[in-house]
Image (cartoon, rainbow, N blue to C red):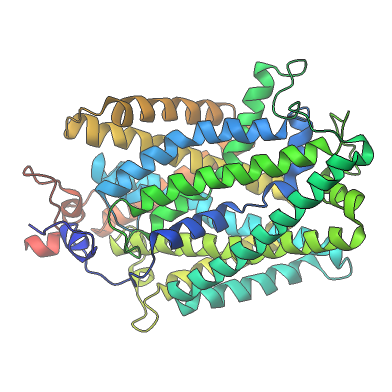
Length: 477
């Protein structure tokens, strides 16, 4: 049996794999990656929409979201410690519960991961059209896609450098806004005053509002889970991914709450934005306290953060998921190829780029449709994740940690289940269709003899009775 240590190589041998990806990412790199994926300035683009839905209590939405998602982050942390490999929830569920469930966990989150880059490019194109209205939106999608594919193609080390640069730029703009907002509020600009009303307004708060806010908040925090796909490229040991996910989630929540609290105080007495201002409400606030020049600068930073930094992280996560599933024979095996020089899954990266290009051009201007499908994919996989924690730790390992292995995953399951149950009907219909396609893919690989139900594919997910040592069919032979 392979000895466990923090170098990572023996961990992979334990699960029947060899080290192919470049293990260079520190825990700090993982935190930076998670922050870039979640985007510290994400509230800018949707501030008006969330403001209207929450009757002005935007920071409350993100506080609720943090509480809701922390349970999912804890479940990810537990499973990434047990299985520090690239497949994320696909590997966790498949190894903890059953290969078939693992396939569907991977297939559902693949819907999220394939559509997130598309959603980001569409968002970025919308922002850039506000600055350069004469340039066609599809052209912006192509430009951003080429840049991001090149960054990921070079390798994870270069991607980490780009992540740090963009995160630094985003944080500079956060600081600029915070300073401008505090100065404006202290001067009473537009009648602004320091108040806690945006955090909680007893006169307007209702359980229905909290439920609606929860759905919005969950979507806002999606991305921290992408850290789990870098498990084979992290050098901080088994706990690195879990620490990075929880740390990143808390940090980004602080950024969200701070910015939206200040922005809400700058529009005193307002509980709803009109149709003509809702989509650019935050940028309108920036313009009202600083001038049109700063408003354009913030629009440009938002477009670059979403269209490049965030999309680079999303494309990276998607390519690692494709790599992991194809390595196990669940998707075409050519996607499992690792370039010997860059140590990156370049074929998977190019496939993600191609799919994103097609989807981006098809769905340009249709943000609502993409968002609902992204939600379904992520939430369904999160449900299976929570079940896998209970199944692996509480039942198989007979863990005595009641909170982490019973209470936390059960609460996480109930919260995610509530959000999924109340999701848009079109999301459910689209999600069911995606699951049906997944069932056909599964059946194909079963008939081919490499699917999760074939005798050759079952072995990689067989847990030895001793202490969870896992071996591939090839090693056993």
